Image 1 (cartoon, rainbow, N blue to C red):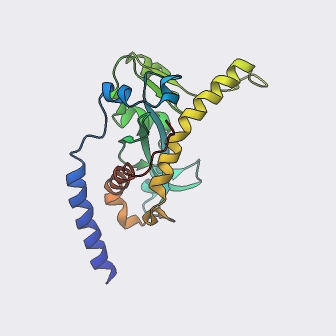
Image 2: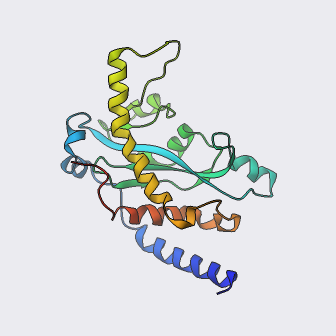
Length: 219
């Protein structure tokens, strides 16, 4: 099969599958989140609605200087696209943003991808320390828990260490969900520049179908 034929086939199948599954709501209602919450969350973060993290996918370096700047990730030291992934406490992926240029910060992506509009008063979010979103989240009547920063301290005290460990232990499940997306061969190595027009759809499709795998969390 020629490369052009393969490309057309991939685009056709991608558009067809995405048109079907994108109409299926993956953001669960609040009562469903609480109803299906594993014991490990119910005992520590009973109001947890979503656990979020950002992930990056390396891409071929664009020839356009402006696109190079938009996609260059200082964290990865290469050109990438970046998505925000959210999972429910019951471990299913419940949110996947469109792909942005790798230069976007975690905070900016969180605020612009639309997930904050889905939150309801009383919801709790677990996130990494890069998500400095406390002010914006609290304005929605919600809370965000992230591991603490040392700032001017030499080390955390016992209470802070325990709290950081508890948050990290629950937050790590979103990283495991992201690894399930990246295990697919399409994401091995750099993504072709010619595939970027449909990359958001491809990531969404992959994330959607990983929800049919084995559980990430032991209840």
